[in-house]
Length: 207
Image 1 (cartoon, rainbow, N blue to C red):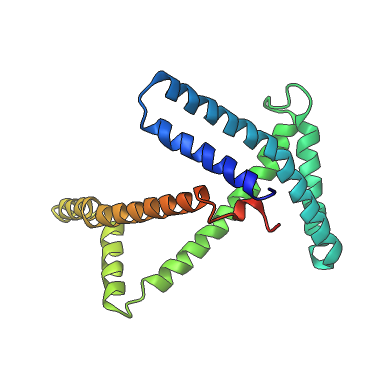
Image 2: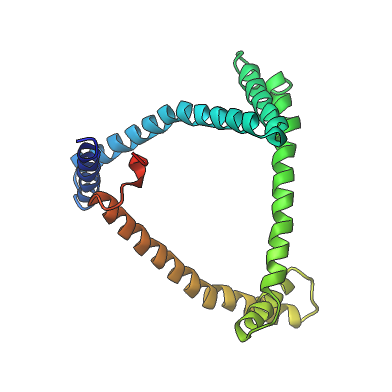
């Protein structure tokens, strides 16, 4: 019963949501809105569980590994500073302590992470664009043509390049994008069917 009841609930809920999609009726629209509202409520109730999991894992990591201890302390300090500073009324107004923490700590940290991500993207692009095979050569030439659009070229090269880039984005790029979207959609349908039929039960945990 520990496994059968959750599987049955998932099957019934999923089947009802699938059926309501094909039923053009106000009752069906009400059911979809009602279910969507409950999904939002469940997500909000899951937030404390996520916070507890973050703090617990951070504490265990800092306790077991001395090298990670300073990062655990920084995580706890940042968490409690943002929570405590955001409790008073008016904490979201400009110039408040909470907004100062947000503007001077969180925003620079996010900018740093995205800056590091840019270096990883550049490194991956360098490895991908080396002409070792025919397909890599096509990728390199296409990327070069597309990037030329950002450079002011003399006429008529600018017009020719713009038309070529427009064709690349509208025809081969769109064809590949649609193939990927169709593949993702088929994979999502397959995975959803496995969940509804009780084949995939990873959402219930290891027990």
